[in-house]
Image 1 (cartoon, one colour):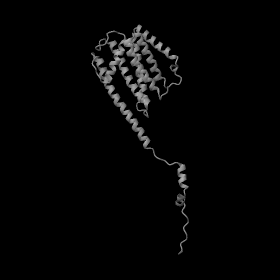
Image 2 (cartoon, helix red, strand yellow):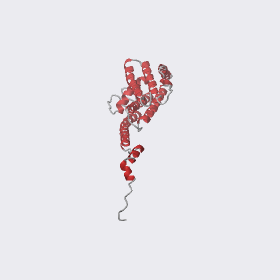
Image 3 (cartoon, helix red, strand yellow):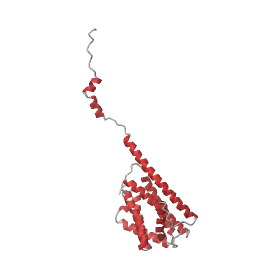
Image 4 (cartoon, one colour):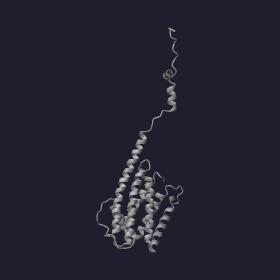
Length: 254
């Protein structure tokens, strides 16, 4: 995995998180949801943070199951100890730092290729996940902040619903099945819609600007003749006559 293909792995990890969370919510219990989310976090960690390190330990295949189990037991321990909000804050910090790291590689950074386009999609998905964590924290801190949300206090059962609500909001679909009630969640909801629209505008401007910059650089290069070409031109008979004209015959009347 290199900087030229890391967003392929990140895209796969994010799709795995979204799909796996939905499947785990519908068919399995909370422990499986923890396992799916832990596996996705490990994949995100490798895809985003491991790209610049040549000897990154999580790149080794045998480390993956150990890291997944560690994150799963760690989150379960935090939940049992009543520190579920601490775990969500750590998850929020991880998503924010990953989004910033992705943005540095994607926006206004040279040539546009397929990997950067995937990176722009990944950044959009990370933004939706960031707000999903924020909504989960708000619901746990202020119960009853949203309508049609389960009243339990287990964050891993609330998180899939808020993933759905976050992407419905950031794309400005607004189905209305889930809606905020209190002022703080209302602020977060309309602010997410604003950020989502501005991101699309900034992304388009970045892609167009990079394309125009590359287009101008490729078509405005000065054409310089090589020294060999100049020497060959100077050595031609015509140039010799121009540069060294023959001696004129003496004037007959002199």
